[in-house]
Image 1: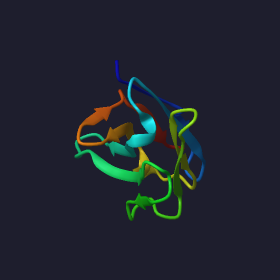
Image 2: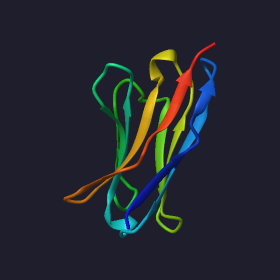
Image 3: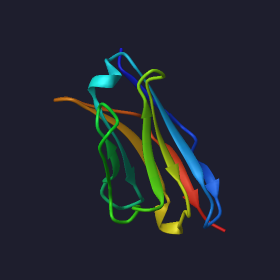
Length: 115
C-alpha cells in the first residue's frame, strides 16, 4: 500500500523557518521523482520544488528560490523541504508528490505564516 505521510507543518512568524518531511512507503522510493506542491485557499495547487530520483537535479518555483531547499534521503525513504525566510504568502497546505508515470500524493500539512 502506497503511503506518503507529511509532517512538520505549523504556525510560524514571518521570517521564521520550518522543515517539512514526507515519509514514503509501498513503492521503490529511489526510482521516483519527488516534489512538494502547495495550495492556498481559493487558489490552484502549484509546484514548489522538485528533486530527481537520484537526488542530483532540483527545480524551484521563482517565488521560493533562494529561500526553500528540497532534499531527499533514499535510505530513509524521506523527502524534505527546508523553508526559510517565510512570508505570509507562503501560507498553504503543502503536499508531497511522487512521480514515475503515476502520481502518488500525501494528505497534506498546513503551513501558516502569520504574526
